[in-house]
Length: 138
Image 1 (cartoon, rainbow, N blue to C red):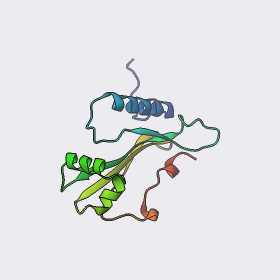
Image 2 (image 1 turned 30 degrees about the vertical axis):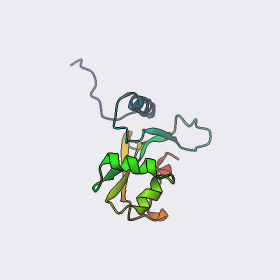
Image 3 (image 1 turned 30 degrees about the horizontal axis):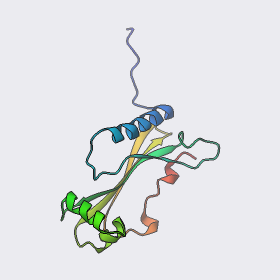
Image 4 (image 1 turned 60 degrees about the vertical axis):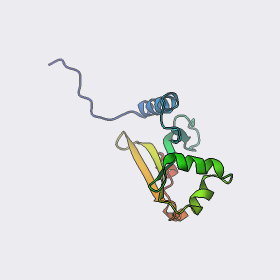
């Protein structure tokens, strides 16, 4: 039949790293909502492996408010010299925070999205927080 072989949907670790680097670069180049943080590459600390090879993508501290507009949230961030956490802890609004992590699954050979969302009034304990570092290949 002479056709090209069917793609099975998997990626090599090198393809994942190349795609991750392209996303980080492209995210900085395109015009996205200024209130969104940037995607970053988080290296895993594994001896003998360069940090650009082993790691994961992260988009952290994405704020969404049901009680205020995004512009009002940004103004509060600028006004409060203590930073994001201080105004969020004192806020009575319905503010949610989201973290997104994309890791490479060496078992399935695909990227996997992990996300965590929490309400600012309900502080998760340190034991209940998701730490993406163990998700890296060991």
